[in-house]
Amino acid sequence: MRKVERSLVEFVGSLIQAVLEAFVVIAALSKVGVQTISSISIHGAAGLDISLAFEGTLSNFMSGMLNIVFKP
Image 1 (tube, one colour):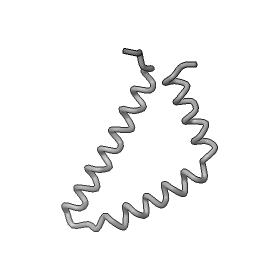
Image 2 (cartoon, helix red, strand yellow):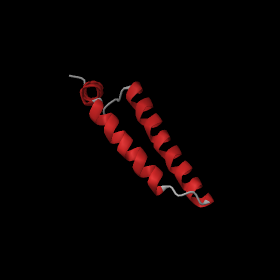
Image 3 (cartoon, one colour):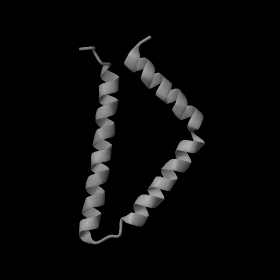
Image 4 (cartoon, one colour):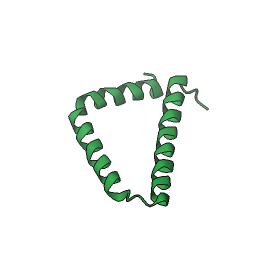
């Protein structure tokens, strides 16, 4: 088995934690009776806008992540 960079493990762990926390918050709001569909769609559209605006920066970020994973 190949060793993995500690920073990559921490990044993926924090990303998974953030996604799980978002799901818990959405589920709790839905359980209380708040309409979450419109909020989710607005946040999705905002995420798409931000990702398109920072396309070059995100490309460089992902290149760096691939360099960490595959170590040329």
